[in-house]
Length: 118
Image 1: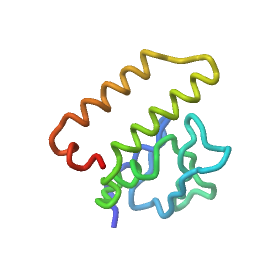
Image 2: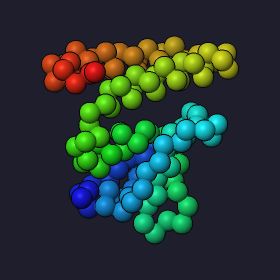
Image 3: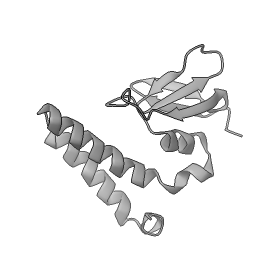
Image 4: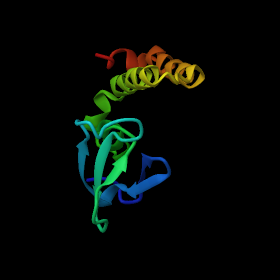
């Protein structure tokens, strides 16, 4: 059961109470792209909210321990996907990609993540 006092960041200024989220679905078709990673169904909202974060990251923020296993891998895949998208469009933001890569590498250098990476 998710903590009712916890607010979950969905991306781009969108938040939902953890205990009101009742379904999460990763977007896997051509609708997926920058800022469009996951559909989140929230009690009291008729349509799903499009989140820019992965389902595992959202679940981890909700306090679901089983989702904590691969957030680092999700971040690495997100970084790779952004690089691929930006290189195809010809608009690569190296400063942003460099910051993200540095944060990812710093996270892997911590001892608690080293064992959980794979």
